[in-house]
Image (cartoon, rainbow, N blue to C red):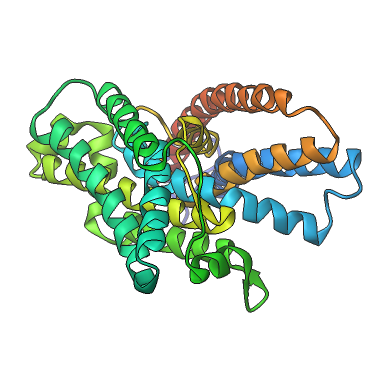
Length: 359
């Protein structure tokens, strides 16, 4: 016999209510949509590059040819290598503006070794690499060990010192001739891929491995977030910072070797290369306050700058307008990055709420 006779007032808990619809499905859909939105935001540099390429392809039929795109990749290679070195410094919340001058000194040292000892051409690479590492060690000693002021000011002073040494050693002129293997690296192909592109890809893969697959990379991110907090949890902040400037010097040396091969000569440089490298890092979405940076996005940033130079050249625009274009893209990149941070923060908060409600 049923306990719930007609008209009875049995407790609601005793009644069988229809099961509410499962709310997890809309939560899952919203979570998936937010995840897609976050990926689109993270791909911002690629979107900018695509817009630039489409614009130049419309304005010049020569831009989107295979030969011209190859030229863009090759021309962007030195900036890309230098940007990879600048990236690790930026990720700890610092700057190294001596890298551009270091590139010039490395090319000069290599050219002088080959000029004075042509039979010992194998010494050119070790000499150039040792030069880049030496500049990095000096920066590390002054900034990390001796703690002489702000890293930007210290490396700016180093840049002027290195630039002066370059002018003294070269007499302010180009030193012609470098070993044939450097010229081959810069001008020949490997399985149909230009040598500079192969070098950049190899360097990028090596750096990505260091940043993403070993603890050193996690330490860099932690120090960029907060050096004090990183030290409190046992991270060797001093040693990591020391290594960062040395690695940046190594990348400057590699960029110098490639530059010497492309120009078939060594010569002094100004601050322009490092400014372009830092611009590439920023356009790639790295935070100048540290803690964030991506290898692939940095390469895209360098490619954006190279594409602008190439596209304006094809359109017969005066080279005097190139810095204007660089500046516009850089300011736009900073603005987009600020907007992206705001939107990304809001999306992540919303994503966390949805996950909490679905749990």
